[in-house]
Length: 370
Image (cartoon, rainbow, N blue to C red):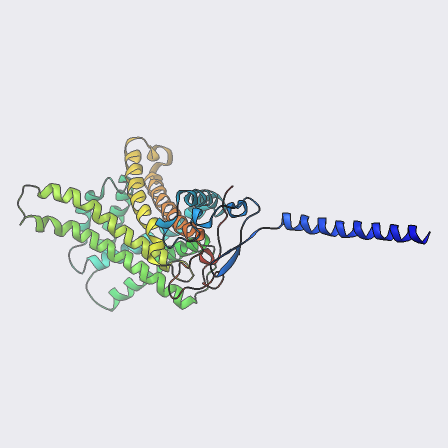
């Protein structure tokens, strides 16, 4: 009997030990694999991660020091995450919200623009030059802008004085709401919450608002000054030069403006310029193409006036702004998810390990696909 009891106790001990091993194995199988790269660790997705199947981290761009260093397999992961984020981040709905604030900010922005432009020449000159932007801005947008410029230019004085600077400051503060709405959208794309103080946030957004107005003044000024300059250039090739040069100039200005927006807009540690390049260049190119496409569609096929009556021009203009905002946000998604693909530090300053970089996309690694 004593021998039987010993055998039973031993068997129960073996079974308990085996059960403990099985339970531990089940827990390990269900846990997310932990990937250790360089100086930091990051928790990736379930067992679908390629690294869990033995694929090299370099094959998917975990060691990339620039977006161009991410191989094709890595860009497949980036593309799928961007596709999912468009839905999860509600990019289309957020773009509509930014569009609403942009429309509210449009008329104060035009007031500031006309005030600044009036320091150099008659504001009504803008009206005669608006046709130069047809093909990029829809006809309905040009109609809305021209109507407001004509109203503003005929309602006040543009002479220097205390009243002028006060009205200019009020116009810029009102138009600042649209820029802050865009900053909020970029925080969502980069998975950040606003950490800047009220003063810092408004200082940065006001700088961007002022920069946007100055770019508008410079663009219209270039349209006016360029023909005068070309009068001193031989006629042969002069017109061709204008037609060909405006597109690369517009592309470069837009790319630079988007790079600044992507770097300073989100509330996070600043990204290195190289990690902003693809979204900026691609966003500028796609914005030009999308604007030209929508302008052509609105001119030849759309009938907003028949559907919305007197609001047709405003509706078409809102759709164009919405398309522009969505393009900007998708460019930000490209930058964010390319940062998310590498374990290397993508932020400015000395290299820091994962989790200590002050930016969600730089501190974590994005999911990979089987």
